[in-house]
Image 1 (cartoon, one colour):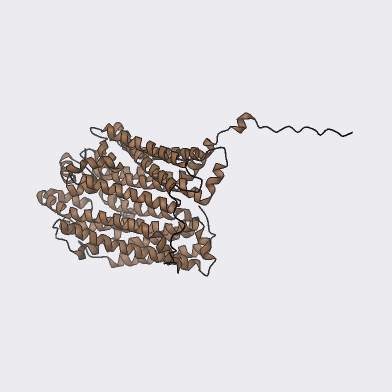
Image 2 (cartoon, helix red, strand yellow):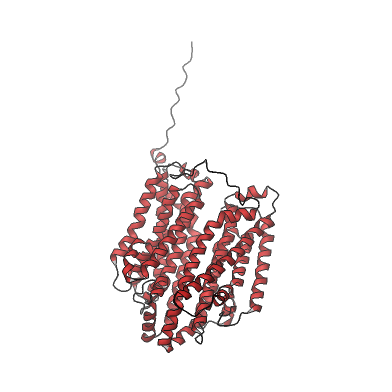
Length: 548
């Protein structure tokens, strides 16, 4: 007689456990990935706003000086660079006009880079599959990530609005500007989110998003060049901020567009996510492309091949800025000739009032040097990205030393910086020649080459951070460069002590060509850059390779 086998009951999970949503854990993970960068971003935005307010009140203390500023700011070349002036006779209006586009560029670039990292970089690394192993659909995960990025954009906007309100510029105007800035950042995060669904590689997503960013900025410059082209401002997020007018006669339609665009683009990105597999893309590259073996003979050549597209973007952007700066020289000369009292204002911001043209060229040269220094920080950051992605492991298993590999990246950073400086000097001279300003090519070349020792110092600092704290390679070095520039820009006007001013390498630069070049300061900064880079090499050789 056979014994009946016991019946095994299926193990059932509690209903709450089976259907527990994974939205909250996914949101917490996304927040953890962005919180450090968001903290640095919010601190930088708040600091920059405070500096702008204090600088305005010190530089333009009375109504007469503010009226002269309003007259200068309405020049077509100035409008192309800064935007259409509105309520610049008020502190809040000046901050929006003078710093608004800078803050928008900073938060917009941060947002598109972070969105590309979350929505495409995580899939490339394989970590997205771990998240999707939880009970959450891919489109739902993308929506959660975009929601966290929208919250981060609100934090960035609040970082600008709160200091403005506290410093007495007006609560309503501060809130409106903060909302506009948040909508701007969220828009470019959504642009990158859409690109992440279309292209299979994070590098391609970043390149396409950055190209869109640059094209929309150029469209804004074209829109602001003449009143007849003002309608073009409605085609670019930069123009929406220009149309906002938060401190006088606010444009609610501009605010509505700014806040609606990221919602629409985010919805498109989520919808597109349902049409592809994880790791795939809607616009996959053909696998039958012709083999390209050029620039694969050495680590330095491959680094040049992989970053030359971004270098072209930096070159076009800096050259366009330099061209507009050169076109402003004639305007500044005419304005000072009509109002000699304005020379006192120029002296407060560091220009040589005895030779306005050379003083302006020298000031613009230092500003372009700041941009080139930021590029150098990013270029060393490309080495960090190669390590974080795991590609460096495949290089070092071959007969390539760490010193040779990192040295190639440093050499490329310095050579590319020199190329950017030469292009900027030519563009500034072309802008001056187009408007009939009496400025020679040698003057613009001397002005732009003058801050290259600071660029070398920024490169050395980035290499040091790469060796010691690799995750701080770009944020740490870029923050130090911007802080040094702000110290030199606002410190003298606010009467800061010499010990603080001397801490900025920009303080030791002469206003070339208005003043003679300072070879001793340049030699000291170059030597310090070599020491920092050497220390970074040694630290890199003694640490383990690390991922993101």
